[in-house]
Amino acid sequence: MSKVYYTDMKAKDKDSNLINKLSKLFNEAGFDKLIEEDELFGIKLHFGEEGNTGFIRPVFIRRLVEEIKKAQGKPFLTDANTLYSGTRSNTVDHLNTAIANGFGYSTVQAPLVIADGLKGKNYREIEINQKHFEQVRIGSEIYSADGMFGIAHFKGHELTGFGGAIKNVGMGLGSRSGKQMMHATVSPEVVDEECVACGKCSEWCPADAFVIGDVSQLDSEKCIGCGECMVTCPTDAITVQWDDAPVAVQERMAEYTLGILKDKKDKVGFINFVMDISPLCDCCGWSDRPIVDDIGILASKDPVAIDQASADLVNEQLGRKNSALQKNFKPGEDKFRGVHPNVDWTAQLAHGERIGLGSRDYELIKID
Image (cartoon, helix red, strand yellow):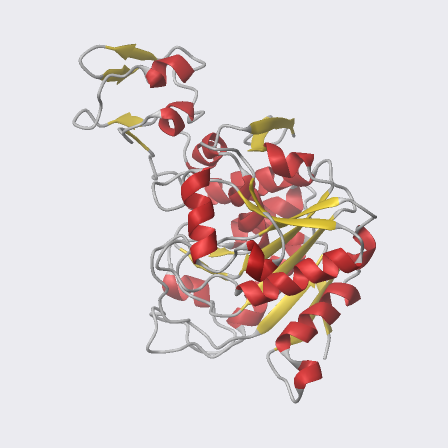
């Protein structure tokens, strides 16, 4: 049974404010003991899309930076570039968005490092030999780090039911082509109207699956679904197919998390901010009203246990009727199914447990 540490939103004085409680949670969970002098520790978080306001507040991240420095580590903030076209699909736009949302050095006191390079092509292949993947592609910079803390905003998600520790790390730190492989096993599609026949897709394709004429043509029989063409295309003429089953996407996501943690034994901790629990991912350019009230912050060394505990705490709440929640308002009812009725969010937890990522059995330890 894994230990999950938890603090609620209550505060009676300055000493018990949520920022100070975060420090106590960090140390009670033993995260300070994970760090040795001069080790480089990544803080994996989501910087928020332009227009989104649900991401974790930078003031909390600054406190975590301070705690890592107290333990004589060297922290940096990190995420990998996104698969979709938005304000974080390349390093330049990604850093500009992070700074605009308050994550500049002057606020958080740590540098920002995008894990998979300028255009999402810098990755390492890690062997895992699991159900969906023999190898996974993770951002080079997080691979090179000595340790990592996965800091997740726990909320709903349209494809995975919820997004927590597993999604933040597994999907978040996969390279852009790795994200394509997690999201879909079908071939990408070329939009003829957008294609300029530049040939970059053919140049980067490891399977020689493209023929360049007036437009680029993809041979689906040769395609291996790696996503390099989509990442390379300068006009976004190669689109992502989002029609894979949510269960399979969640299982691939868990396997990516396993690959990212493989060479970081006893060097990883997870924190879930179960606050501003919006119905959709922070990748949206907006934040809808939370589906339940704020709950608190959780910490654990087990990504499966912390996500299970976070989901259980959300489902114990009374649902907000003037939110995106359509049903399951009563305490104990499934709030995520109340928003996304066709998504079985337990798949990521079940597969994570099955492959040795963690345990769904946990002990919840309250920290005041």
